[in-house]
Length: 323
Length: 287
Image (cartoon, rainbow over all chains, first blue to last red; front, side, top):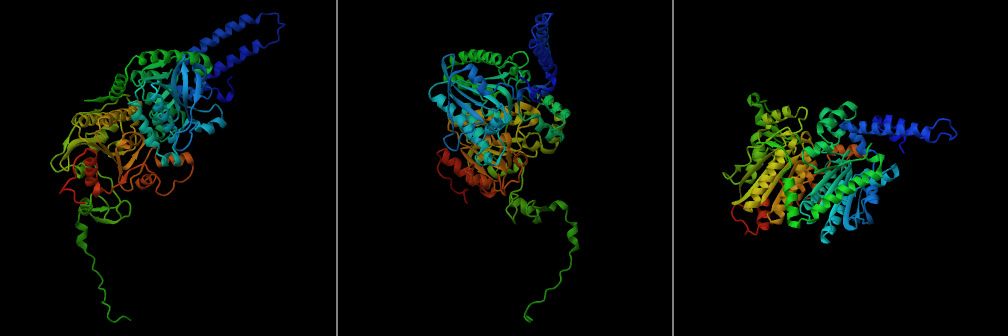
C-alpha cells in the first residue's frame, strides 16, 4: 500500500480517495445507512480519477513513475510470468553483480533465458543491488548467459530498469566501456531471438547494453533516454535540480513510450493497468506476458540468419539526418 | 676565485622580437614550454619538451595516416537534422559548422596507408565536443559498408565526449548502429583498428572505440565510460593520479598499445598487414 513517502505528488488525490474508501470499508458494521452503495460509487470515481491522471502524465511525471520503488521490478515480473526459474550467477572472472540477474525459466512451458537489471524495493536491497547500476562484471554475466542461450537455441528475454551503468573507480578499472560495447556487438549477431523490454527507467548505455534486440518493448509508463533529465539539465542549463529545468529536459529529450515508438526506437508499447504498473503488479505482469508471447511466437518462425540480418538492418537504419 | 672563468656578458634585450606575430609562437598546455609554431607542427603537435600530445584536428590525422595525395573524403553530403526540435540545437549546429566545418563530428575518408587501401574515420572534437548523433553513426555505417564491400581495413580515430544529447535516444542508438556494422566486419574478417585520443568517453567509448581488433591509445589520452567529474561526484572523493589515462588503461588490460603520434602510421600499418595476411612492408616503414 502506498505510504506518504512513496506517494508521488500527482497521485495525492488518488491516495486521498483510497483512504476514504478504506475508512468506509472498515467502519463499524451496525450502521443505519448502507455504505456499500457509497463504496461502489467511490470506487468508480477512483477508477476514473486514476484513468484521468494517468492519461495526462507529463514526461517528468512519467520519470517519477518509472523510478517509483513500488513498481514491479525484474524479479516481480519473473515470479508472475515465468515458471521453473533457475537463477545463474557470476561472470566467471571477477564476481557476481547483483544489479543484473539472469537465468533459465519457462514461458508457457517453453524454455527461455532471462536477463535483466534488478533494483531494490528497500534501502538494504538497493545497497546490495547498487540501485540497479551494474559494473562490468554484470554486463559480462549477461553476455555469458546470452551466449549460453545461443548454444542451446533458446530465446533471450531481457528486462531494462537502470539509472545507468555505475560510474565508479572499479567499474572503470575493469572496463565498463568495453563490457557495454561487447554486449552491443554480440547482441547484434546472436543467433537466437532477443526481446528486450524497458520496464522502468532505461538509462543510457547501461540500458542499451541489454537492449539490442529483434523486438524492443516498453511498458507504457517507462522512460528511455540517452541521459538522465537531471544530467541533461545540469550540462545544458547548469541546473540539474530545479523542477523547472528537470521538466524542461524531460520534455526536450523525448523519453516517453509514445515518443520512442514514433522514432521507431521501440517496436511496441505494453499497456499498463489503470493507475500504472505499481497499482497492480498482477495485471501489469499479465499484460507483459501476453505481448511477450505474441512477439516470441513470431520470432520463433524466423531462421537464425534471417533473424540476425533483420536485427542488424533495423539498427543500421536508426537515426535521422539531412542529405 | 676562479681566475680562468669566462666573464658572462649581460645580454642586451632584443627589441625586434616584439614584431613577431603572436601566432608564430605556441605554448604547451601541459608544461608551459614555448617554441615557434613551426617546431610544434613539425613535431605533430607533440610538445618537444614534455611529450604532451596536444589536440589536433581531423585533417591532421588524415595527413598522418594517409599516403600523400591518396585521401578522398567520403559521405560529404550528410548533415545533422534536428529530429527532436531540441532547444537551441539548430543554433549550436550552425555555430559548430562555422567553427569546425561541415563534416559534423567525424571526417570520413578513403585512402592508402603505406600503399594499401583503408577506410579512415576521424572524429573531430572541435565539432560539439566530438559528440555522436545520427550523422556520426550514419557516416561510420557507410564507411564500414565501404570496408565491407572492398574488404579494406577500417581505422577509426576516436575523440568524443559521448552521445549527442540534443538528438536524444536516437544518439544512443548510434552506439548499437556502429556496433552492428562492426559485427559484420568481424564476420567477414575485415580488420578494424581503433585509436583512442584525448578524450574518448561516454557512448563512443562504450561502442566502436572499444571494439577494435587492436585498440591503440595516444599517450596521456583520457579514456573512460564516465567522465572524471561524474565519477568524482558519485564516489565523493578525489581520483587517483593518472586515473583513466592511456597508461592506466594499458596497465589494466583495456588497450593493446600506447603509441606516440610519430609512430602511429608505421604501427597501424604493421598491424593491418598482420591481420590481412599481407607481407611486411619495405621502405616506407623506417621506425
